[in-house]
Image 1 (cartoon, each protein chain N blue to C red):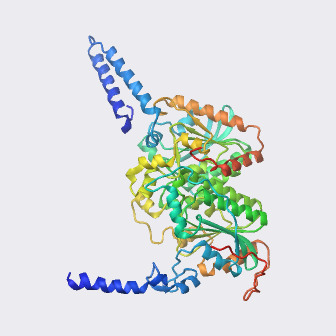
Image 2 (cartoon, chains in turn purple, yellow):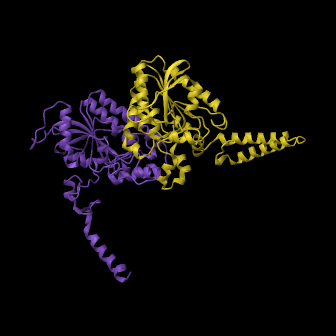
Image 3 (cartoon, helix red, strand yellow):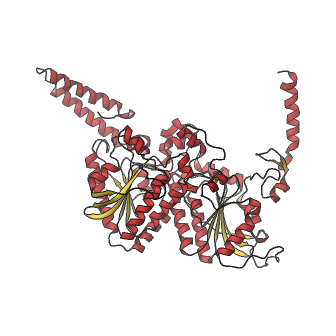
Length: 303
Length: 320
């Protein structure tokens, strides 16, 4: 320890780290540490161009990349009773909600939309991990039910992207009740003979995994996504032993028969198009340059 | 020897003193302690009333977990006849944390399924403390299927801290097994009634309690996570379980208000563990009532009833 390590080096480092991230132009990959230019990252769907690490992606960004021409219509989700339990931990639940809304610009943790992928009309729902860890409460339950009802009404498949730390603690038992409620939604789709495809993204845990995320006709996961019921920490505390490398990761679940496929985000769209078109008995999608989308489509709502 | 909980300590002291006096009188025949002992008894009785009149949510958790509280096995032995246990998931193993089989309830053939926690060290280990693995849920799915095909009502008794968080359980698809069990509950065209007799722990409970009618014993709890777990996540301190239990609304009374349960079964004074037989009888009467309400309904009507019930949950808040 001397003057150089204590004073000079931190100063130098701080100057450099400041230069490295001006105005969020650069993102540091949490896996390999490579600095990535923001446009490069978003063009690659938040997948690191160096190590293929899949970072979080918001539902809106995902839908813009998923739907033809980035065009989709939002499906309205019935509002749920605000703060049904009048829950308060260290903060009041409504305050936590407001903070999340301000931070994400979204009203809740799930986005439902209608649109076309490779000219195949679908309904899609995506969970927003950046909104209170994507946790499943009444709103998320309502969103999945609304998505299923919309799919049944329009006779379209439902593609659901799951991402959640589990149940929304602040809605207590009502968040638990989303397990049967969303299961009813899945049954509506199955009875209508419509495909229900689940894309499990990092992380999908707890009550979310133990309900709609594990009831799909096809289960696809993004690489290295954590998918589990009980989290690794809880298990280590229970059995008091170290868990194997890669435990509860997408590839591990694939090996144990819980998934159909592990597919990188950048290849997902094509794969989803192929699968839905085959399940619906439609001819293969046209590859290559598609004609421009029809202009009578509703433009995306301003975020 | 009664097992007292921490909040019952003053009661334990009084009852202990009364017991001491009586023991003394038994060895010394000239001594008459009946007046003093009776006074202590009445003091104990009024204290017990006082303690149980308004149990805090955390104390209810303690009562719900009391080791002498009647468990699934006790209910099956007392309320059912001709019980034929059925075992195995036909895939991997038989999970002893879940017991179930064919039985008669008031002479009517039914399928009964429940979590069993065990009653001494050996049986508790054998039953894995009521924490089921995927095999337990898959066994339940099998039994519900059987009930559905042969038109037998299903009765589920819920008493679990939660599904088992273990390595093997995860590898064999704990999530999928729970999801399938909930799904099966919603699919069968026979009456399905459920009683939460102790702890209704998270997904492990929902997998059995997605029923047409859900009843709950007065001092049972039903929640998305244990208060300790909730405290660890939101308070970053598992010791804040009292606050968490308060905030979570996990008591039978609150759940009834929220429309999650359909009825609350009163427990005898001092909790089910002090009067197991009376409690079991009350649960039996509640099951009979619930089954009667559903009898004669067509399979489709029963399935629709269950769906509607769960889709409507959430319209009531705690303030209503």
